[in-house]
Length: 634
Image (cartoon, rainbow, N blue to C red; front, side, top):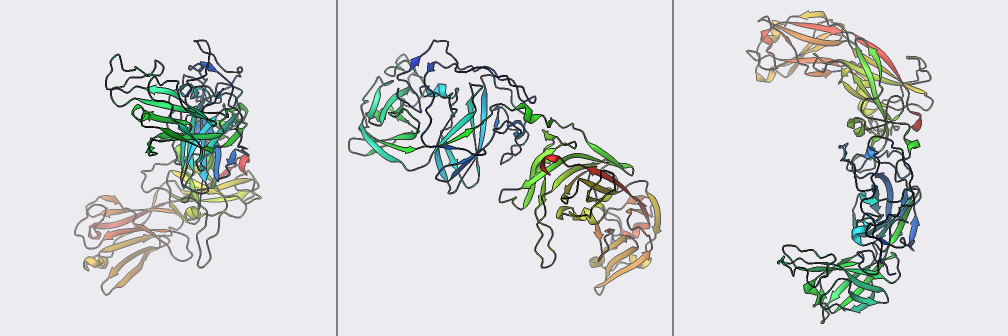
């Protein structure tokens, strides 16, 4: 029996019209989640029998899911899905467990499409890189034991063959996805062939096809094998009774315009898939005739048939990579530690009259792209009780933390350890005036008792140092990096947050001398509130006025200021900035007014309209949360 990669219209063993399967038996699969639906039977019966594809000659067996060709192409088997999803959470690794990585570019957690109903279909995802790029490769993939040599192209794609024919590899990793129907529940491997080498001339052959009928006729032959017409498509302007005349009844299709075409398939004499073949065509004068030929097929218009006097047959070898131990279904035992969906167990503590709620934990890894290789990025998301969390909120997939600390003087920035990141939600109103201030400190600890066995605060990070040393406005969602020292058993998060009732602690009337107009260049008047209450503004002669106007003793408290207007209205003042000095870790809120304006407009209050400033404060409350990191990745 001769072999072909393309269509096969010659030498077939024909089975009963109802078709037959090639399954060895059944194997019950226990779904691991709602998306892991029960597969339907293959609705594309095999109509021809034949031997499975022979084991290729140039075969490299992957180790750890990774294999490389001698010419520097590296292939990593990433994962498998049921072909109806773009969500990486619904892929599994070749070993059957949860896939921890995301695709690049990320595809997001888009809703799955409806389950497929035409067979046990699987989408395989490979990450492919090359030492030297760009690379254009021909591709030949199949499942050993399922893929048959004699199947025509229209049947192959439903029974173990990869339908992809070509692959372009550029500078960055190429994600190749291919769909295969896995008829045999015992199948456990996949072979991927790549042909990238130089084409070499094998032989020359005379064109033996001069006119119709075309289908099934030999076009060229030699020691290398033969080229046979395996498809004849009539694309005639006429759609009458003669539309398919001369093309044979099999595979004849009438279209509304264009020219008739035929497809040639090269059947190598070797009966193997070891080499890729193509044809070059020439007329009687040796002038090339344009021909689309690759991976053992060639398409020719009928008008070209009479032009072609001879063919040049070329070939190049495939390099085959074999991936063993492939699980075409998730393995139930590897998913027992996985939880699904947004509503998972959380952990909360009171902090004054607010609460801090731990939502999830993210383990990180160093980014592997040019734009993130100086950052730690999401690796795996866990619920607070230590389960791998799938279909989690998408924001947890986008966590980033710097690899380096903040440089000091001439010292180079210090490389920081790989962190975990905890998502904490504070339960307070985002529209409260003003937003609560606070900070978080992270300690390793030997004890699960809050506040006990604390180690030195060891892991301040650049994106979090403000929270580690100063009181700053908090958002309802906070992402806390945690890098424990090696001896720590747990992390303890110390939350210090302004809560409680606002109390008026100070009232100040503007100094009439500060209100005198001095020109448009001297209009900003700043009120600073901290351990002292101070006033700042620039005066003529480029002098800076900085004077103390009261002892408020408002350090380590949250402050807010109202302007009591001469009209009787009480206006909350918008925070303009924070000030700090030297080693004082407190940030002092500052409020700007306009010394020149004759009336208040928008957010900028006219100083001359203010009867008095009313300063209120509230205390800082503390709470400690004990966080146990999952044992999986300590």
